[in-house]
Length: 193
Image 1 (cartoon, rainbow, N blue to C red):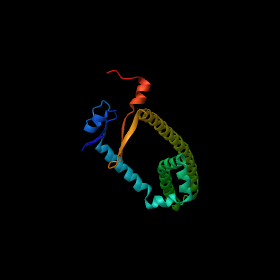
Image 2 (image 1 turned 180 degrees about the vertical axis):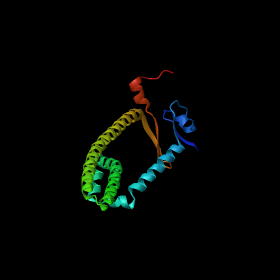
Image 3 (image 1 turned 120 degrees about the horizontal axis):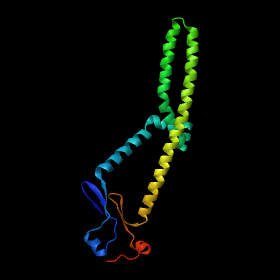
Image 4 (image 1 turned 90 degrees about the horizontal axis):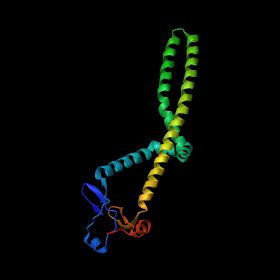
């Protein structure tokens, strides 16, 4: 494995012992991970940790509702999507209620009751539709997550079964993998030179 200044390069191929001693690695399969991508992953991970372990989030997660939602991520996603989508209709309804209350102070009490009832029924209809939409969005997001997880897991399991771990670099905590020549020869026959 060679670690450069700008990027991390892993050579997944089988080599002779003589070549390993000389540290010359020549191979056709080269996987390069840019340093910027690794830094972005680290910054996103630290941001998510700061959000998850924040005092208000930790206080919420210690409640029984927080523990229940932690155990049911689909329901938590549906609640989050519903909460985000319900803020605008609730804000519009509160503005409408304030305007009708001001109108009622002028003397339109019956009109206020009628309009608030009509607004309440409208809000109930909108929130019901948003609840259904939130569940559908959660289903789509969950299906996308499960599908992409399984596709990536299948892709990398097929790719990883071709390689075996040869050593672990302690300073970088990076695993060096080389192609398992015996399994490759069993599956595809000996390569012609």
